[in-house]
Length: 548
Image (cartoon, rainbow, N blue to C red; front, top):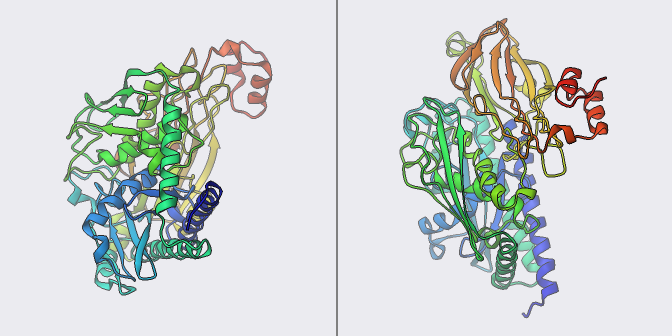
């Protein structure tokens, strides 16, 4: 069958619809709030070579862009010629899947007339896999929970019950884990079913021509976008809080007429705690940041990802090696976009946003140990909240917005309905966005307390508590993040602590940096900020020289 350009474009659009339905199947079926309510997932369709053809828009760069490479690795473990209908493969290997043990990646072959014609894959977060859980205090990967190597989750369409039992018995949330795994299976099966329906509708025997069209069109368009940039080498150093010591993230970015290469040489070495980042995850967020500014209108697939190459010396904190602890790899992995923007600002200053909060304010918490010993009900939840983004060229930053993670903020009502906590307050923090001609996005303040006479334990791994988001071109820095107790005690950004009955934990997320001299901000924008309580009258006077 000969396909013309119109046929191919219609099929490409249809494939983008297939992956959206696939992703929604996962969200609708999931048990964990971080998946069901916050969209911490990925879903995609791949060709026979393991190249990603389409990805669901809902999802995180850390899941999507790692999945794009993981499928290539999994089909070396399970050769195509040995695959059989009714099989689904799975792993949570951080160096294959999505950077830490809590993310499970599944892969299912799509059979048409007895032949494998492509694959569907997906990833989502399981809250608890035993060990020290979702906290940074593990000292190797074995502290952090159950490690599942590439294996068959389904064979002859039957779930590997022993594997499922092992996952459940190693978790403090066994029912949620079981439900989330079945949701992942449903996601794969939906993707396969919709892909085959599409192929039959268009009378396709294989995906070869469509794959070539998608990948080559996207690759060439991305290269053309790169060719619009000033060629050269740009260096940037981003200091971050770290854990036992402060850390420097280094990047050397080389822009040529065919690709962009990023090298992390000079970056600090690994921490002894679980904030280390496998290179696949650091690459995922670095490339995402580049794609936000370079060919942002080109769909994300193997072709548009190909011109971006990321390397780093083994043993640096952005290329940690097994068995380094990596549970909270997002803490620094999600700082890499600001590292990329620091380089790009030197090449295209008029297009680059200011620095933002960047690192998601992820607050995993669960019952205190004595609760279950005394017959109480165990619980666990991972609350996700966000700070402000940096101001954008010509626009203010976005407040309490998930960039770069894409993980939506946890909803108060859902959080309170599934755990014995009360969220007493959630509000934007006035003046937390960096001042400028264009203001940085605001952070938010939350107040949490136990709803019962039982304590809960919190596991923190947060950034931007020492080093704020910087502004650009005269814009001011954003406010730093802060964790305090109602007593006034300040809590460090990394580690484990208790919240006892009657106590209130106060979480303040960082604000984004501003762009441009504050004196150039329009009077209308200042008035609007005052009316919406985004700035105080005091800062309007002292920073913008505006009196109410």
